[in-house]
Image (cartoon, helix red, strand yellow):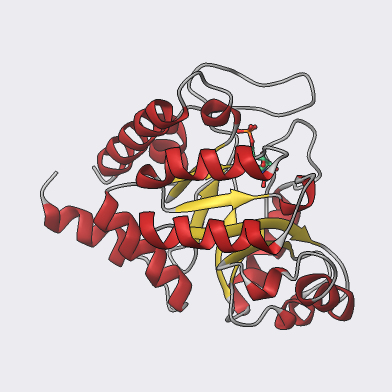
Length: 250
Ligand code: BMP
């Protein structure tokens, strides 16, 4: 597709948040709308994966609390790879408490997420004011989940989107449907070769989420980190995701 279409596609979104703008900038430069979910449990595996998928992704999504040997050396090493390969660090913490508790979980404890994460996920169940504590970070609101039987029905989604759109630090939302142009849309539950797992996860292809949901960013976990060659499969998801994104513009 011609470059002016690419420019239009991402700039049509009315994103004011600096982290959202940075993500769009990286996406255009790398021609990627891929976020790899690094759900591995050791520092060594995480760093290896970050090196391998780094060139193909816009952000690396983390669950830092599953790492058995967490340390700030890991954070420093990750930051270095993120800088070199140009991607953001996205902690999928899914906060879901009152503001005061979320603030402690965000800034304190072992992980001190506020000191290194570019982006975080948060539920919006505690209401708009609870989100104010997330400063100097791009917040991605969980408005709809990918799993079978999720409680995020249409009524919840409408109310959650309303909270997300009113909070100035929220740059995007996790959902399985089209949302407004005021927020970036992130869609997990993406896999080329599987329909789901035995624990409720449900998968769609990159084509489906880009064309049917108008997803901006696809999130891929096991499809990449459990494949025989993570770099190769990241490249495949990058190509499939980006092409589907361009085609979704019509
Ligand atoms: P996988 O592609 O291996 O199923 O991993 C999906 C990732 O996205 C996991 O890290 C999960 O926590 C996250 N996720 C999800 O699957 N569904 C949602 O609705 C929200 C998520 O953050």
